[in-house]
Length: 332
Image 1 (cartoon, one colour):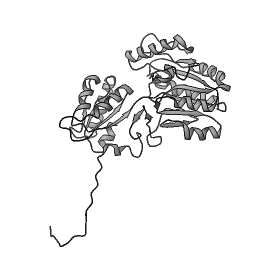
Image 2: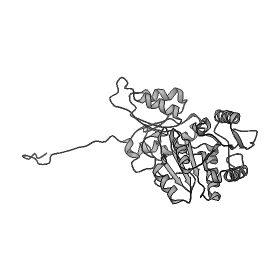
Image 3: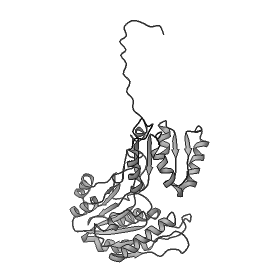
Image 4: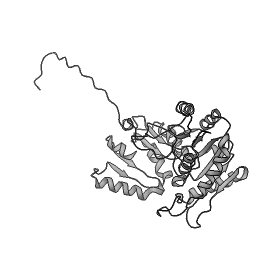
């Protein structure tokens, strides 16, 4: 987002999330070393609840590019719509928000592939990706087999410090995130079937990969974004039901299908309400220019990142028309 704004000729106020202030400083240093002129890219670390509203409401801000939660994104969207004293333009908002992403696994799927892809999509980066799989919607004929095989696969994951090469799953980003995810798991245990909860090291912000089985489609665990290593497994009796369950979410970011049935794949293309659809592969790891990334519904607004029209959002279009059929001649 920040470099796209620069490439389109804008000055940028760059406010990273509080927990990413150090890597934000590194980005700033790289841009300065690359020759970014003084005052063009401006690094502004600080607490979002204090700096954010001031920036959002300031009359000199023309465009707000935000990545984060739905709650904060909607607040920014509402505040940006207000015309402030001295403001002579309407602000634009690009918001990349959350997801409640699902992978459908039908009865024709290659389970060797599907189990691995669901596991990696759900627990890569400890589930801390907006594109992460947090729902597996599995057709009834293979449901029990899939659950057992996924449980065994997840149980083999190695949990530990992220810098160690043999670690499969590291800690979540901070104590606050750890606490929220643990509270969500505790709530799920009250009325859901716990299939697996992995033990974790005592020191650090770890949350073990957690699987809940037989989750009802309307249960909070199947609807609310968690942003951690928690996967809900839902059973669908028919492919029609599986599509309906996936589309029931308020989010529309990523989604996937594992199937070897051509008609199911064709229907996924036409009917699944997701910004990025992945067939017979994981649903994370979009590559710039190959899989332009972004969603709709409550997952965000704006053109897809890495897409051909992304930079156009950071420009003000002008049209110039000149009548070149001159009458007379002026030497200068």
